[in-house]
Length: 103
Length: 141
Image: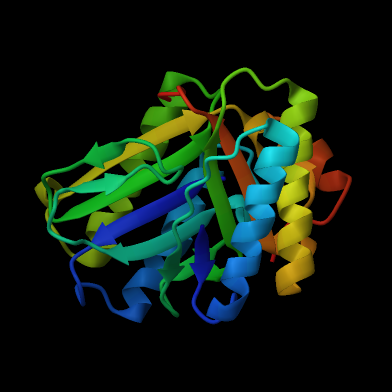
Protein backbone atom coordinates (compact mmCIF):
# COMPACT_ATOMS: atom_id res chain seq x y z
CA UNK A 1 0.00 0.00 0.00
CA UNK A 2 1.37 3.40 -1.00
CA UNK A 3 -0.39 6.23 0.79
CA UNK A 4 0.24 9.93 0.87
CA UNK A 5 1.15 11.31 4.28
CA UNK A 6 -1.92 12.59 6.08
CA UNK A 7 -4.44 10.89 3.79
CA UNK A 8 -4.98 7.56 5.55
CA UNK A 9 -4.76 7.81 9.36
CA UNK A 10 -2.88 4.98 11.04
CA UNK A 11 -5.89 4.00 13.10
CA UNK A 12 -7.77 3.09 9.93
CA UNK A 13 -5.12 0.76 8.63
CA UNK A 14 -6.05 -2.33 10.67
CA UNK A 15 -9.59 -2.09 9.33
CA UNK A 16 -8.33 -1.74 5.80
CA UNK A 17 -6.04 -4.71 6.25
CA UNK A 18 -8.90 -6.81 7.61
CA UNK A 19 -11.09 -5.83 4.66
CA UNK A 20 -8.37 -6.72 2.18
CA UNK A 21 -7.85 -10.08 3.85
CA UNK A 22 -11.57 -10.76 3.70
CA UNK A 23 -11.79 -9.91 0.02
CA UNK A 24 -8.76 -12.04 -0.78
CA UNK A 25 -10.40 -14.98 0.95
CA UNK A 26 -13.89 -14.43 -0.44
CA UNK A 27 -12.95 -13.67 -4.05
CA UNK A 28 -9.65 -15.45 -4.54
CA UNK A 29 -9.78 -18.13 -1.88
CA UNK A 30 -6.42 -16.88 -0.67
CA UNK A 31 -6.05 -16.70 3.08
CA UNK A 32 -2.35 -15.93 3.44
CA UNK A 33 -2.13 -12.17 3.01
CA UNK A 34 0.89 -9.97 3.71
CA UNK A 35 0.41 -6.22 3.80
CA UNK A 36 3.05 -3.47 3.94
CA UNK A 37 2.49 0.25 4.14
CA UNK A 38 4.68 2.83 2.46
CA UNK A 39 3.91 6.40 3.41
CA UNK A 40 4.95 8.94 0.80
CA UNK A 41 6.03 12.00 2.73
CA UNK A 42 4.22 15.27 2.22
CA UNK A 43 5.72 17.04 -0.76
CA UNK A 44 7.10 13.78 -2.17
CA UNK A 45 4.07 12.43 -4.02
CA UNK A 46 2.61 13.82 -7.25
CA UNK A 47 -0.09 12.99 -9.73
CA UNK A 48 -0.07 14.64 -13.11
CA UNK A 49 2.66 16.89 -11.77
CA UNK A 50 0.55 18.16 -8.87
CA UNK A 51 0.57 17.15 -5.19
CA UNK A 52 -1.21 13.83 -4.87
CA UNK A 53 -3.85 12.53 -2.48
CA UNK A 54 -4.07 9.21 -4.32
CA UNK A 55 -3.38 5.87 -2.68
CA UNK A 56 -2.05 2.92 -4.63
CA UNK A 57 -2.90 -0.61 -3.58
CA UNK A 58 -0.60 -2.97 -5.41
CA UNK A 59 -0.32 -6.65 -4.85
CA UNK A 60 0.20 -10.15 -6.18
CA UNK A 61 -2.63 -12.59 -6.60
CA UNK A 62 -2.76 -16.26 -7.56
CA UNK A 63 -2.13 -16.97 -11.23
CA UNK A 64 -4.99 -17.86 -13.51
CA UNK A 65 -7.77 -15.55 -12.36
CA UNK A 66 -10.29 -14.92 -15.10
CA UNK A 67 -11.12 -11.34 -15.99
CA UNK A 68 -14.34 -11.30 -13.99
CA UNK A 69 -12.75 -12.62 -10.83
CA UNK A 70 -9.90 -10.16 -11.04
CA UNK A 71 -12.37 -7.30 -11.61
CA UNK A 72 -14.40 -8.35 -8.56
CA UNK A 73 -11.24 -8.45 -6.51
CA UNK A 74 -10.10 -5.00 -7.66
CA UNK A 75 -13.53 -3.49 -7.18
CA UNK A 76 -13.90 -5.06 -3.75
CA UNK A 77 -10.65 -3.52 -2.59
CA UNK A 78 -11.49 -0.13 -4.09
CA UNK A 79 -14.96 -0.08 -2.54
CA UNK A 80 -13.66 -1.09 0.88
CA UNK A 81 -10.93 1.51 0.72
CA UNK A 82 -13.38 4.27 -0.12
CA UNK A 83 -15.86 3.14 2.53
CA UNK A 84 -13.24 3.06 5.27
CA UNK A 85 -11.16 6.11 4.37
CA UNK A 86 -13.75 8.36 2.78
CA UNK A 87 -11.55 8.71 -0.29
CA UNK A 88 -13.09 9.74 -3.59
CA UNK A 89 -13.45 7.16 -6.34
CA UNK A 90 -10.42 8.48 -8.22
CA UNK A 91 -8.24 8.61 -5.11
CA UNK A 92 -7.51 4.91 -4.99
CA UNK A 93 -5.84 2.81 -7.67
CA UNK A 94 -5.80 -0.95 -7.23
CA UNK A 95 -3.77 -3.43 -9.17
CA UNK A 96 -3.26 -7.16 -8.83
CA UNK A 97 -0.48 -8.82 -10.78
CA UNK A 98 -0.24 -12.56 -11.25
CA UNK A 99 2.05 -14.08 -8.69
CA UNK A 100 4.42 -15.46 -11.30
CA UNK A 101 4.36 -12.38 -13.55
CA UNK A 102 7.89 -11.17 -14.22
CA UNK A 103 7.13 -8.22 -16.49
CA UNK B 1 -0.43 3.71 -13.95
CA UNK B 2 2.18 4.71 -14.67
CA UNK B 3 3.80 4.76 -11.27
CA UNK B 4 7.33 6.12 -11.13
CA UNK B 5 9.21 5.77 -7.87
CA UNK B 6 12.33 7.90 -7.64
CA UNK B 7 14.78 6.48 -5.13
CA UNK B 8 16.94 9.37 -4.01
CA UNK B 9 19.50 10.04 -1.27
CA UNK B 10 17.88 11.80 1.66
CA UNK B 11 17.79 15.56 1.22
CA UNK B 12 19.22 15.46 -2.29
CA UNK B 13 16.32 17.19 -4.04
CA UNK B 14 14.43 20.30 -2.97
CA UNK B 15 10.65 20.52 -3.20
CA UNK B 16 11.02 22.66 -6.29
CA UNK B 17 13.19 20.02 -7.95
CA UNK B 18 10.82 17.21 -6.99
CA UNK B 19 7.86 19.10 -8.39
CA UNK B 20 9.72 19.89 -11.60
CA UNK B 21 10.75 16.26 -12.00
CA UNK B 22 7.14 15.16 -11.47
CA UNK B 23 5.93 17.59 -14.13
CA UNK B 24 8.76 16.55 -16.46
CA UNK B 25 7.97 12.84 -16.02
CA UNK B 26 4.33 13.61 -16.82
CA UNK B 27 5.44 15.51 -19.92
CA UNK B 28 7.74 12.67 -21.03
CA UNK B 29 5.18 9.94 -20.45
CA UNK B 30 2.25 11.76 -22.01
CA UNK B 31 4.36 13.19 -24.80
CA UNK B 32 5.24 9.68 -25.90
CA UNK B 33 1.89 8.06 -25.32
CA UNK B 34 -1.81 8.84 -25.30
CA UNK B 35 -2.13 8.54 -21.54
CA UNK B 36 -3.96 11.36 -19.78
CA UNK B 37 -1.78 13.41 -17.44
CA UNK B 38 -3.78 12.33 -14.41
CA UNK B 39 -2.54 8.76 -14.92
CA UNK B 40 1.04 9.69 -14.07
CA UNK B 41 2.00 9.03 -10.46
CA UNK B 42 5.42 10.01 -9.17
CA UNK B 43 6.70 9.31 -5.65
CA UNK B 44 10.09 10.20 -4.21
CA UNK B 45 11.42 7.81 -1.61
CA UNK B 46 14.71 7.91 0.24
CA UNK B 47 17.25 5.23 -0.59
CA UNK B 48 18.25 2.97 2.27
CA UNK B 49 21.73 2.15 1.00
CA UNK B 50 20.94 -1.46 0.12
CA UNK B 51 21.02 -0.93 -3.64
CA UNK B 52 17.73 -2.70 -4.10
CA UNK B 53 14.09 -1.89 -3.83
CA UNK B 54 11.15 -4.21 -3.70
CA UNK B 55 8.93 -4.37 -6.70
CA UNK B 56 5.93 -2.12 -6.03
CA UNK B 57 3.68 -5.19 -6.10
CA UNK B 58 5.61 -6.79 -3.29
CA UNK B 59 7.34 -9.64 -5.08
CA UNK B 60 10.99 -9.65 -6.06
CA UNK B 61 13.43 -6.77 -6.04
CA UNK B 62 14.90 -4.30 -8.48
CA UNK B 63 18.67 -3.84 -8.04
CA UNK B 64 20.62 -0.72 -8.85
CA UNK B 65 24.12 0.59 -8.39
CA UNK B 66 23.61 4.31 -8.91
CA UNK B 67 22.80 6.94 -6.26
CA UNK B 68 19.52 7.72 -7.98
CA UNK B 69 17.12 5.09 -9.30
CA UNK B 70 13.84 5.38 -11.15
CA UNK B 71 11.60 2.33 -10.67
CA UNK B 72 8.66 2.47 -13.03
CA UNK B 73 5.53 0.43 -13.51
CA UNK B 74 3.61 0.88 -16.77
CA UNK B 75 0.86 -0.72 -18.76
CA UNK B 76 2.12 -3.25 -21.26
CA UNK B 77 1.43 -2.99 -24.97
CA UNK B 78 3.65 -0.22 -26.27
CA UNK B 79 6.29 -0.68 -28.92
CA UNK B 80 9.97 -0.84 -28.10
CA UNK B 81 10.66 2.58 -29.65
CA UNK B 82 8.07 4.28 -27.46
CA UNK B 83 9.27 2.48 -24.37
CA UNK B 84 12.82 3.52 -25.17
CA UNK B 85 11.88 7.16 -25.58
CA UNK B 86 10.03 7.13 -22.26
CA UNK B 87 12.94 5.42 -20.49
CA UNK B 88 15.58 7.74 -21.92
CA UNK B 89 13.41 10.83 -21.52
CA UNK B 90 12.88 10.17 -17.82
CA UNK B 91 16.59 9.86 -17.20
CA UNK B 92 17.46 12.89 -19.30
CA UNK B 93 14.98 15.18 -17.57
CA UNK B 94 15.82 13.83 -14.13
CA UNK B 95 19.52 14.53 -14.66
CA UNK B 96 18.79 18.00 -15.96
CA UNK B 97 16.55 19.02 -13.06
CA UNK B 98 18.43 17.24 -10.29
CA UNK B 99 21.73 18.50 -11.72
CA UNK B 100 23.40 15.11 -11.54
CA UNK B 101 25.55 13.36 -14.17
CA UNK B 102 23.98 10.70 -16.36
CA UNK B 103 26.02 7.93 -14.77
CA UNK B 104 24.45 8.69 -11.40
CA UNK B 105 20.95 7.70 -12.53
CA UNK B 106 19.48 4.40 -13.67
CA UNK B 107 15.97 3.36 -14.52
CA UNK B 108 14.01 0.15 -14.80
CA UNK B 109 10.40 -0.08 -15.90
CA UNK B 110 8.25 -3.14 -15.37
CA UNK B 111 5.00 -3.69 -17.22
CA UNK B 112 1.73 -5.52 -16.73
CA UNK B 113 -1.54 -5.78 -18.64
CA UNK B 114 -3.83 -2.78 -18.31
CA UNK B 115 -6.69 -5.04 -17.27
CA UNK B 116 -4.89 -5.84 -14.04
CA UNK B 117 -5.41 -2.32 -12.68
CA UNK B 118 -8.54 -0.44 -11.64
CA UNK B 119 -8.65 3.33 -11.40
CA UNK B 120 -11.66 5.49 -10.60
CA UNK B 121 -13.69 2.31 -10.30
CA UNK B 122 -12.93 1.10 -13.81
CA UNK B 123 -10.45 -1.25 -15.40
CA UNK B 124 -7.71 0.72 -17.14
CA UNK B 125 -7.78 0.93 -20.94
CA UNK B 126 -5.12 -0.55 -23.16
CA UNK B 127 -2.51 1.95 -24.36
CA UNK B 128 -4.03 3.96 -27.20
CA UNK B 129 -7.62 3.45 -26.01
CA UNK B 130 -7.58 6.13 -23.33
CA UNK B 131 -9.79 8.68 -25.09
CA UNK B 132 -12.88 6.50 -24.92
CA UNK B 133 -12.10 5.54 -21.34
CA UNK B 134 -11.73 9.15 -20.26
CA UNK B 135 -14.84 10.08 -22.21
CA UNK B 136 -16.93 7.71 -20.11
CA UNK B 137 -15.99 9.17 -16.77
CA UNK B 138 -13.89 11.60 -14.84
CA UNK B 139 -10.21 10.90 -14.62
CA UNK B 140 -8.21 11.98 -11.88
CA UNK B 141 -7.32 14.58 -9.30
